[in-house]
Length: 124
Image (cartoon, rainbow, N blue to C red; front, top):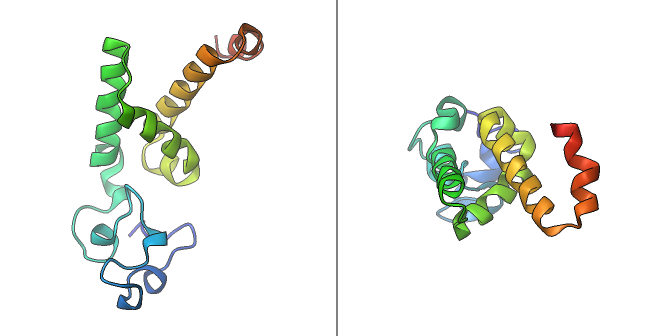
């Protein structure tokens, strides 16, 4: 299972010593107690971009680009993808790249024009 990478082990996360949901420090939107300890759902590495988490992100990003209105959930999700980049890029690189683009777009809208002028030509 891909649950046991990045320094996490079954013994550290799944034993009942931590309570009925295991060690809360081990879990996020992709790696949950049910998936990693209970065998419910598909291994995140096998699901890849088809995992519900990434499909939700993809749908929200598509809605944003179609409507130019960002839902709060999208604004909440994309920094998490970037914040856990090492694990997420192995599971769904397109989602991480999309999250990075959203972050760049947000920064370009907020920062002075000189910020965008200095950084964005390299991406053209």
